[in-house]
Length: 114
Length: 113
Image 1: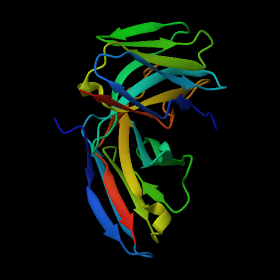
Image 2: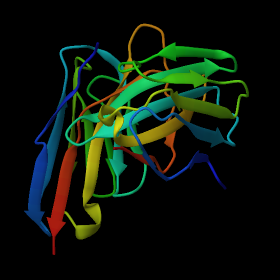
Image 3: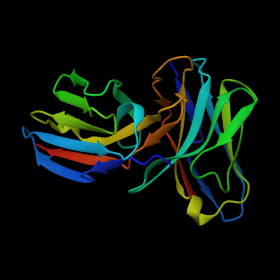
Image 4: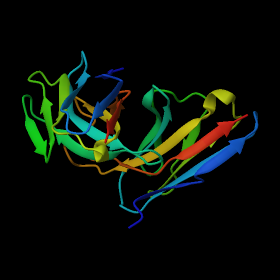
């Protein structure tokens, strides 16, 4: 039972490099999210998607882009990495159509930008 | 932006002690969720409270939602080392969208043997 899988788990980038983080869920969830977690800052929403082909900005979207071409996948892209993007990134998914939906999280991607 | 403030930010106690952590906001939420996160892992849902004044118990953990649905508390009785972790509260926006979770900054709990 995979749930939410993030790849890669660790990555070191040089300033200005680009990369894509992949999130895959096998629970047929409609909603998917990308959060970043920094010390003392909790989880901050970067972008989210309420369905295949749709995306929306969260609290801290600058410097990131996302795509959801398939229902099960949600990609987070960094076009030109900056040291301020050093963080732990979490992907999550939840189901639609319920009053309260539990968010299921991946194990995180630890990104360091040098 | 609906903000959730958690207190205390850090808590270190001895095994067997009781503790309470708080989650407060000036905004009304349709529901509040509590998650627990262990090092190197993603958060895992503990409980969801929906109704103002609601109290839910999960073994030694007691969760309460404020009457006005702006705040919540988590009380742990006779804490054990296995309770160590980061406790996060998260609110779901009221007024329509049930998909946008707003997280507090968390309470890092350490229970010493």
